[in-house]
Length: 307
Image 1 (cartoon, helix red, strand yellow):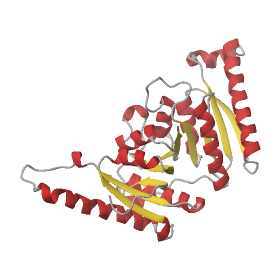
Image 2 (tube, one colour):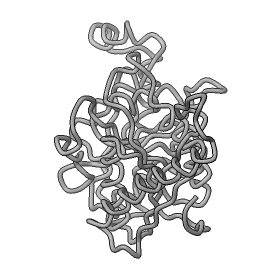
Image 3 (cartoon, helix red, strand yellow):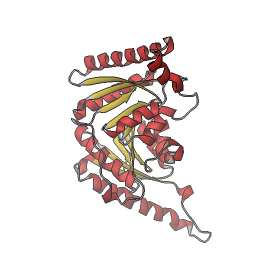
């Protein structure tokens, strides 16, 4: 590791000079500027996965990797310097698992920001192993930005930030982690001057027949109960935000369908979607819930995962 480790990291961004990490760095730097926080640019090199030949001199192998790692992280710090004063930016690198180091740093961080592979349907492939592990295990909120595949960095526009024209969307159910997601989303909305849009997706195990029931029979006792519960959830959450953040404009909505995809679709116009890591519908033992996993894969905007 280079430099002296801090006891608090402020906002941490994982950086490896890929398109996704460059987007993450720019997003994290602007967030640090708005919040007046320190930015830590972190680069990890997984030595175990590095290519090596049988005749390689191991005495020079590690120093060479350290030199390369330092060059990468210094480049990241330089890029961050376009947004922040140099005194607000620290660069650190490790020879070890990038995900493990980011998770460790998250213990003393306010936020971790990571980039990931290009957008794709959830069944088209898993998240990059680092971003998935960090989102699943970090001790603070994590923002994941997706980098389009097959494009040069200069050709990839920054996603829209939350603001006047781009809401902060938070998906909720009746779990404790959903309450924490609402709190995190409200704080972002207040700092960014954005509308907070609280959404609950009414979902039944028999959703395939719901559309017919709703239109032809005016709903059933089950569907009415699910819809009413969703309305109660968003109303209660909105009232709590208004009491704690009176300057934040709050809107609510109840949607119907697959929770993960319904929330992801809102990313077409949102500046940020906030979800809990695993809500009431997640399976015990899952690292990242099916809803949050699908939102990260399919949303066109950055996604914040809250534990």
